[in-house]
Length: 58
Length: 154
Image (cartoon, rainbow over the protein chains, first blue to last red):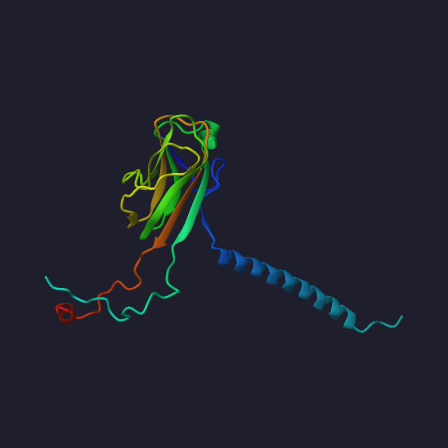
């Protein structure tokens, strides 16, 4: 008789995990979406800042 | 015989929606991959889940995804306690194990939920162990009522 500890992820186990509710999954997706849009907005702001810089006379 | 009302304030106005809720924990085990792909020997214990202190396991069971080796039966419970409190001698046919009628387990201190491989060794099989747990630890364990109030029968 042996004891095999499979509580964490191993080659024989996925590891124990709390299964999130549908509501929590929806909130996580929403958070990811907001984070993604926030990054895009930062990029747009950076581009606008570049455009608004006074151009040197050439 | 007397009845003492120590329910405190609140009455029967219903339960709050923001109270603690039970949660589902799962762990999927490939029995054939246990012990360096040798599988589990007869009477081996598969430690599958942590039970935090002051937690009740409201229900738990095994879903057999792929059958184990022939003749294998499975228990699910607490090693050193009631080893088959949730599943007792499941014949490892695919599907959900039969739930026992035994009283549910409250872990006063941290413990583990274990699968016991019985009746034969198993070099095959995939099982998903699931448990619905709830934290039952107190947030106010001090008695602030006066002894007079306790001594007054309803």
